[in-house]
Image (cartoon, rainbow, N blue to C red; front, side, top):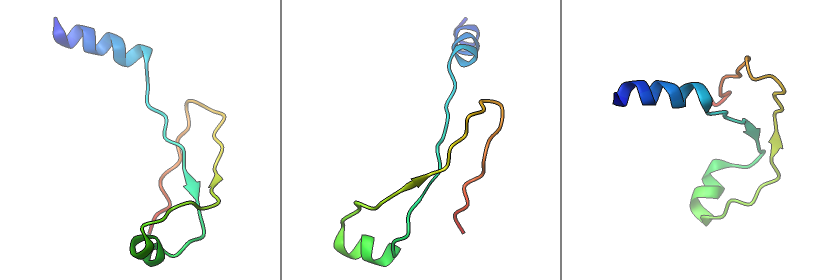
Length: 56
């Protein structure tokens, strides 16, 4: 029964990740413990297409 309920909710709701790009040095963020960057968000107007995280 628990699995059926879980499957039902998975069909009603979904997770959508949004990718953001910022131009900051990761060492400065870790050292200063401050993260208030200007973020450029990649828009995705489609629910059936996904982008991969471009982190290297």
